[in-house]
Image (cartoon, rainbow, N blue to C red; front, side, top):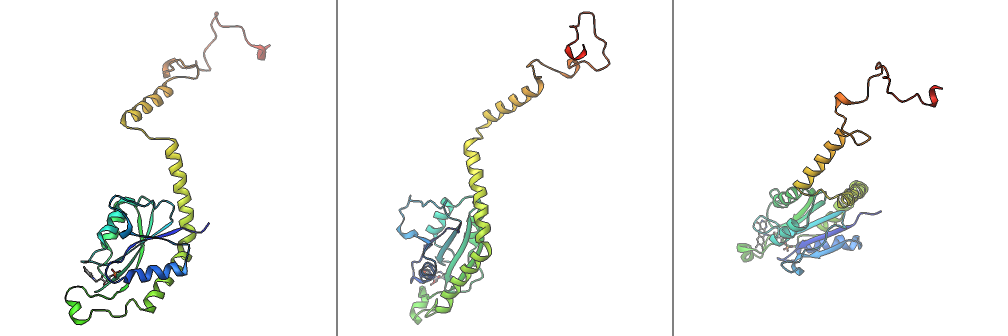
Length: 229
Ligand SMILES: Cc1cc2nc3c(=O)[nH]c(=O)nc-3n(C[C@H](O)[C@H](O)[C@H](O)COP(=O)(O)O)c2cc1C
């Protein structure tokens, strides 16, 4: 089975991040995409069928798009595997910490990130014709596809295997609901009661348990069975 991938993204400045998204989809038409701008405020996609969740955004005020993060916060769950995809106007090194934080809180894993400069006309940059003209360029775009291809080759198989395990765990948990505190207390009490009772259902506290081998039979004992005749 091949891993299934979705790209959840927002690209609101110049469509820079979308260029990376489009290239990934052109190279891998099986990838699904969700533009967060098309979702309603209370609309949350089901990410459960996907082995790989690529979260894409421009960097705005040092952060991933807040709607992208809100959707991640709502939709990610334990065991999800996330790749960060971003374009930015300035330096790369501080970007992505917020996405990492959301992943950690949801017990999802931010496996890796890919980023490159993007054309930026925000604030004072528009008076000088913008920063990073022509970015992402072809090399940046090809780099994103190569990055994903390598990720697939390195992790694709293991992610599918791990998901099968999670699905099995989910199915078991659904069939054996844990219940609340009262249910757990009842279950513990039942277990203790079972231990205290013997096979015949009578209480078998240690002192009254089966006689030791050295005990002599009394006059009232039943005659011996066919084994002794
Ligand atoms: C409102 C706004 C805030 C921005 N803040 C940052 C920032 O803090 N750091 C940075 O490196 N780039 C910043 N940028 C530049 C964008 O990250 C960059 O242009 C990016 O490629 C935009 O991606 P997009 O076209 O997909 O929206 C900002 C751009 C805008 C419009």
